[in-house]
Image 1: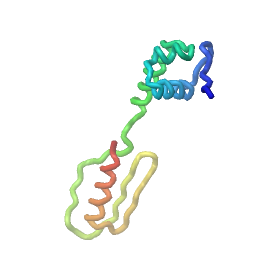
Image 2: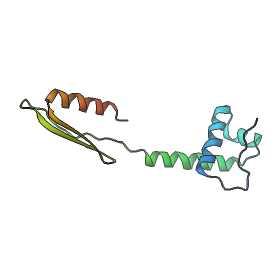
Image 3: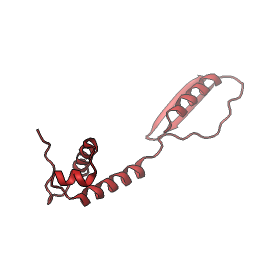
Image 4: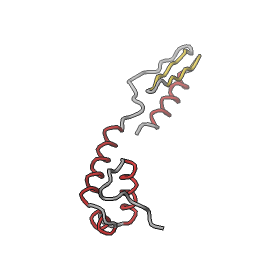
Amino acid sequence: MRNRFPEREETWTPEEARRVLDEAEQSGESLAAFARRHDLGPARLYWWRKRLAASSTTTATPMLSLVPAMVVRGPAVAVVIRLRGDVTIEIADAAPSAVVAIVAELARSLP
């Protein structure tokens, strides 16, 4: 069964455009060839590809950033790590080695 694409005259939503572009990519054809085969305007596909790429790069921000720090020997202390989105990690009586392990794991999750 062939997927229904939005008509030429219809206004596309970003979700519809993403679906069409995904199918075009999976076809292995150029956008122009894919558009011709499905009676779509090639300019529309190129426009949406550019628009969706621009919106994904402007919204892609790191979820986490680390600041310079030094772990020193001493008694265990309470540690509070605040992340974006009101996420807080609180560790009571954190040994320096535990802080190092947590920061190392968070650093691995950075994009």
